[in-house]
Image (tube, rainbow, N blue to C red):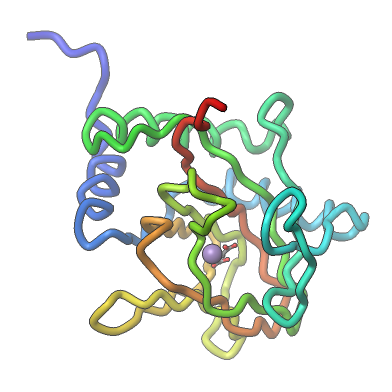
Length: 207
Ligand code: OGA
Ligand code: MN
């Protein structure tokens, strides 16, 4: 028997963990050079003032609510993504295809934004899937911060049902979880905290 695709053990592990328990933390998802290049892009976009206050809701319900979240974002244009994101986006595309083959999630596309939490920023306890964002199936956060320490704050705390896990936003770490199933929060960061945050989406409902 011949196979045209090779089995990617990382994608395999992610698919298994998303089935049960529904979340997974993957250290060193990209190599250090690729990760650093994405970090440099974010620092540049941050320094040049291109990142906008993030909001809650979408379209007509969009509101900036600094008491809920105080991060800044820049959406990635899937038609013309920054070249340094090419490897990362190719990995996410391969993962999307793998999840569709093995987990039947019906993931149609991936959307993501560059994210910066300036010192003091946080995102209160929330779910990623709500009325305006019903297409979100799987949330992904890829971190870009070398040598992050406990005392830098900014952990992602995910409520697992039986307790909670805290994820340090260390460069190279990718965390994924089922968007509708896990309450989570970003604790106040004590230094600039950079990431690429994204979602695998189901197909839009045809009007
Ligand atoms: C979000 C979010 C988590 C993180 O942007 O919805 O929960 O660790 N981010 O940045
Ligand atoms: Mn979230």
